[in-house]
Length: 74
Image (cartoon, rainbow, N blue to C red):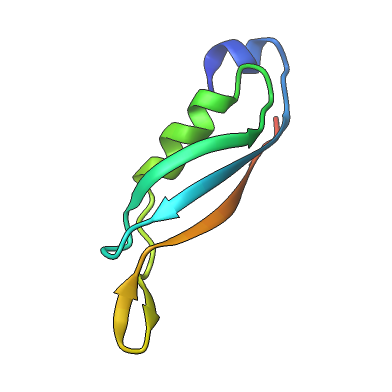
């Protein structure tokens, strides 16, 4: 959680479109539903994730998916 967003009490859902490569790593990501002060943190988090590669006819293929990152203050 970004400290500035936390101190401003900003919460919300950032939706990201991510391209997952044949190795399961995120090769590209962009925000499609922004929330001020939270977009960069969401992008940085998603870019670190590793997914199970998507298989099509026995071959790993790249896929595009949407990811929802929910920021909630406790």
